[in-house]
Amino acid sequence: MIRIISIPLTILAYFWYLFILCIFHPVQWVCLNAFGYQAHKRSVDIMNFFLISTLKILLSTAVYKNRELIPEGKPLIFVANHQGMFDINGMAWYFRKFHPKFVSKIELGKGVPSVSYNLRKGGSVLIDRKDPRQALPELKKMGEYIQQYKRSTIIYPEGTRTRDGKPKEFAPNGLKILCKYAPDAIVVPVTINNSWKVFRNGSFPLGLFNRVTYTVHPPLGVSDMDYNTLFLKTEKAIKEGIE
Image 1 (cartoon, helix red, strand yellow):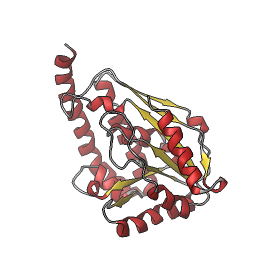
Image 2 (cartoon, rainbow, N blue to C red):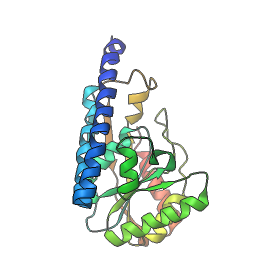
Image 3 (cartoon, rainbow, N blue to C red):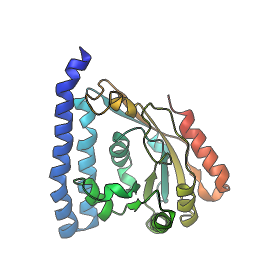
Image 4 (cartoon, one colour):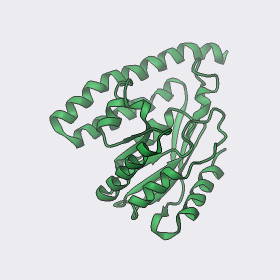
């Protein structure tokens, strides 16, 4: 019965998600070119609110925990496990106060309405995971950016999403470069749970009745410890929070 119900709801969810992406592509362009950064950021915030609301169509919820732990007025590096596409929308909306930028794979820089435009124009960086020579200066640029403007970046050290909720090995190099060029930054570990269940049947039909959670763990100062200790503590906090 649930599978039968999920079919029309999946169609509606995909339609809604694509509709929002297409609507906000020109909205972003107008906001950025006519009114500047703040207007563009606001348009992206609103877009992510509507995108994460897609979960409601799937009779699911997004739950956020412990945002009060995040310090203000500091450059921030949010580090999270990666389970599905709602990780991105959920974190972009949840952490909107901190002007989050993404460290994203270069393939997303073109071809996706709204998403590609925002990644290229909104301050995020696009890296080629197969080419360290290209990735290094991009990560350096991001570290320097959040250090200067006291904003935030979001990185998923697993690189690709997990299909069953079990975490993959965390790659240390991306976070290491960010820390090097943002020495005043605070690393904020975040555990995402149940996002993968939306896609447990593949791309169609989507899973229903899920409770996707985003849990913030106690922040860690980059300058308070050596990098290896920081990385291990960050990874441990995230993985121990996975259900």
